[in-house]
Image 1: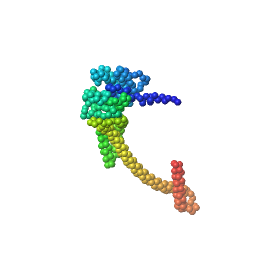
Image 2: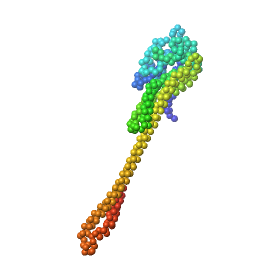
Image 3: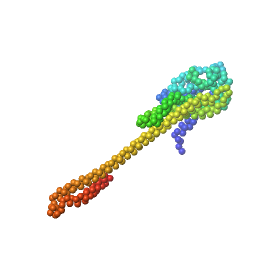
Length: 420
């Protein structure tokens, strides 16, 4: 047996997205960005500065800024994610949650990496609820919109999912005795849910921008249907307008198609992560499930409704085009039938004229033949034989005409047989 050339790559893919084990207490900073293909080279140069040496250009890199700050970076199909893990000093004399010089330097390095940020989160991980509630006032979370619940067992989260002046959202997690592996996996799933949620919501502005365009398209389509039913306008003009409308609809669908498909795919991932987190509500607080259903699902449904409307408009344009083509084809068939009937009448007339000409030709040829025979008879001594010239002509008129008619028919048959 031989080893498949991409076996190792496939196996590595199953382990690349795992976070390193989180310490308690600690801080995690994560950025999710959209990166232009032209910026990928500059992005790689920045990441490689602190990344562990590896062969090739893998989509996942990890490294360490110093002994207390490490990072992981991952390249996605339409962007990247970068996560910093920093230990927090356990000394009560120090402000363990303040950003020190080393973390500030790491944040400055991250700021130099190209890309457009679509989500940036600062995660505070504490040992228990007591430590979390002591830290909570410093985070400045909005109590009216505060989301708090247990997830994946005993771990608890707090957040209002709002941006602060520094560009970060705040997320507070209490481990409450969860072992490091379970806590890391739960925190990563929690972040993935938020990341997929933001990526899915990129489709909402596109849907909102296109919706009025579809309103206009539907109005134009209704007007065309009314004019088609009236039958007062030329079909070619209606077909031209309908073709322009179809092209406009296809252009819009092509422009938003990828974004709507991505929103649908990310929406399914959000549902999966939400079910995996096993949310347990806490009385007096909105849970993560409540927040997602209230804020996220309407946006995803708006994008889904836009896709349905685009599909319906396309079907209506197709049906109207089919009706118009059917009417045009029917009119063409009727015109062809009228033309065939006209040709049949013309052919019948030509046949009758041909028969008339044929009869006149027989008479004319017979007349000329009789004239020639009359000249011939003048030179013959018919009087000596006691035969009158007029009597001879009278006798041969009928046979001569019959002979001419037979000769013309034979010539006609030979001519037609040669044409076939």
